[in-house]
Length: 175
Image (cartoon, rainbow, N blue to C red; front, side, top):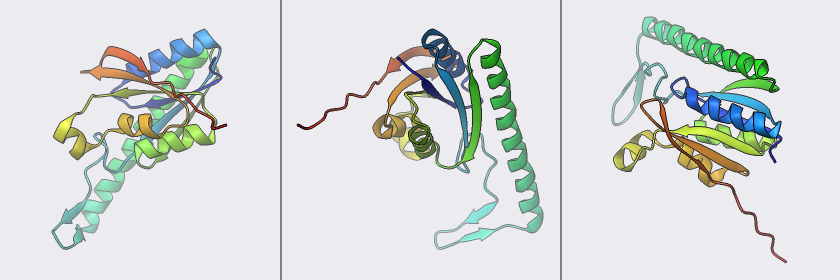
C-alpha cells in the first residue's frame, strides 16, 4: 500500500513518529524523517531585528552573534531529534533516512514529498483555529491542500494524540 512515508517531525510531536512507524511496519514502507527549521517557527530563536512600520533595523553585532549561536543550537537539536528517531526506526526493522531543511514548513513538506515521490505524509496538528491560525499559520492545513499524496494528520493536544485522520487524495482523470 505505502512504499515511502514522509514524517514531518517537530520536537513537540513525538506521537507523530510512533504513528508513522506503526504504518511503516504494517506496510513494509521506508521512512523519511523531515524536520523543517523555520525562522518564524514556534521553537525558533527570536529574530534579532527591530521592526518599525517603514523599515527593519538589525540590532548590534553582539546581538547577531547571540542569535547565530541560538540558531546553531536550534539546528543541532533538530538533527539530534532526527538521528534519535532514525535509530529507533531502524531498531524496529524499518529502513529510515532523515533530512533537515530551512524553509516554510508547509511548502517544504510538500516539495520534499513530491521530489522523493512519497506515498504518504504523516504530520501533527495543534488544531489552530481562527485568529490563532491566521497569525501563526497552519502547516498541516497547507499540506492537506497542496500535497500530491495522501496525508495523515495526528491531532495533538498538549502532546497527546486526540485522533488520527487520513486525508487520502482522490485523483480524477479526464477522459
